Length: 422
Ligand code: HAM
Image 1 (cartoon, rainbow, N blue to C red):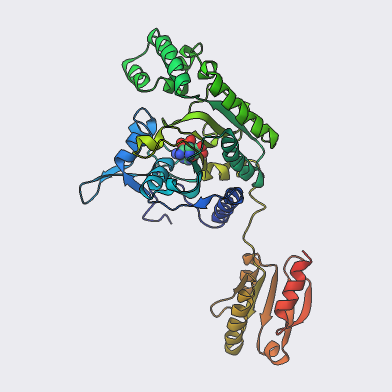
Image 2: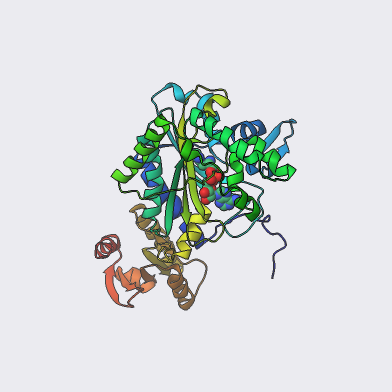
């Protein structure tokens, strides 16, 4: 039977058992950020539209085509956040977080919204784990941020991915490059729309998916060739720092990030098992963003990792199946008195830290044991009047089928001992 209501087109949803993997991925990615002293920040999923038009940039697809923008009841223009960095920067400025110890180191996770054409790995509501380190411009901080993402992927067991890095240099380098690129583009035969796009940000043409534009851009001047000495030295230092801690990378001078605020080091993690939507995470430094949004002139760097694509990548590598929910014990009780006493016993065991489930309803033994089996519990125990009277019951190892007689009063200790064997 098909249900009357369906989720909106192109959203990603997680329900058991896959939602366990979702939760596990978030926790695993958070661990390296915690180890480096990053703190959580929780922000609204909607903001004033202008925050994104100014922060992310009007030349981007994200702002020009993909924002969920609406008028609220007070007549304000509101947008569902398409990314996290602008909102974090708004909060840092608004709450003076940049007036204390620098860098401000924050992490966040949650849903983001882009009205893209849905396909595998590309959703209209998707999830990111992100970090931002704001207030210090130091190549070691660039390397720290990149390494946190790398560590996260590795902890998840991912292997088939590559880290691409490049540098957009400082303002002087970008200016030199932009004028060379503009004169190159001027001589190209382009349609009006593409030309308008290039006028807003010529770098966008490197990212154009159409093969005729790609062919035309083949000989275009690359920013990496225009880095002045300071920018060159900065980029070399980032590379040295990454190598010193064993983070492998490839330099990709043609990489263009989809958001306009980037400067200096930028990077993307690309997975080979995902087809067209291969970017599992990306980020970079953003020198002017804070000032653009009305704050001090401080630099920042961060990343956003796509949880949905990471899960697809794990599935593509066959490393998702080993993860499932864990239950220590399933308690089946038969008869009113046993039901009452078991309910208390289950509660006590949970308080001691065990994951315990119980049978509900007036199930016959066979049905209850089926539920025990389905729960994936390591052990099951049946408690009826006879067991209450004797104070002992048979504890069944669900994997081997072996049973052992145990006392009900010593059940916690027995479980603890058996867990240690594993
Ligand atoms: P982004 O590259 O636009 O960067 O997004 C980061 C990641 O989010 C992508 O690599 C991808 O894995 C995932 N993602 C993006 N759009 C979708 C979608 N429609 N469906 C599924 N996954 C998607 C940012 O958002 C920046 N705020 C990152 C950053 C933080 N830069 C500096 N600080």
